[in-house]
Image (cartoon, rainbow, N blue to C red; front, side):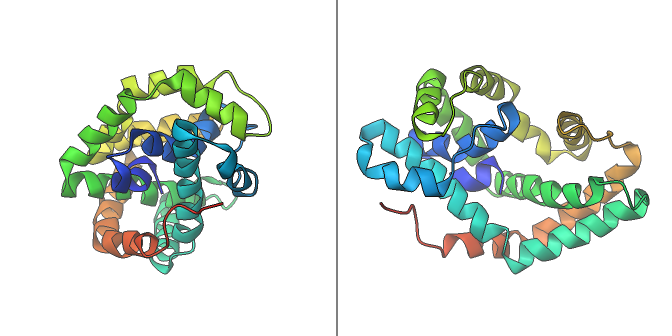
Length: 224
């Protein structure tokens, strides 16, 4: 799941929304810093107020991912899109098709949510503006096994970039995907991939409700 899919159920709780973004933010900015359920969950009773809400959001993200990545609809779409990318990237040693099958499914699910309810994405950014990046970084350094000083500046950049709006358009989505590929040291995609993104959008649209329903039936934020 991507940012909005994790957060749209909690848009009345800015700190929980921020917490749901933390694992993905850290994977971008400092991959050596991880929030793990086995570490964070036992600490919940030691946390008060805002710190606990942030931790609950992070735990919700981790639970969502565990469920979502085993959802039959997601597994099917991930495989289908991987095959479609492989048709135009035939090199068997090219690692991009399975990576793209996974990430494109997730990004387009956010695009589907935005199309269903555009105010959710507007609200997502609005509530994150109410959260202090330095406070988020402080909580992460309390919860993780190692500290980072990179998170707060990145959150500010994330809010300024507004990348989730670009998922609505195939050309802009391609640009964002190439940014991700460069970050993980994989070659960028060319314009040929636009046709795959267009078809992928239609496929995700048909299965979006099924994927989200699989997550929504799972119990909410775990308690210590």
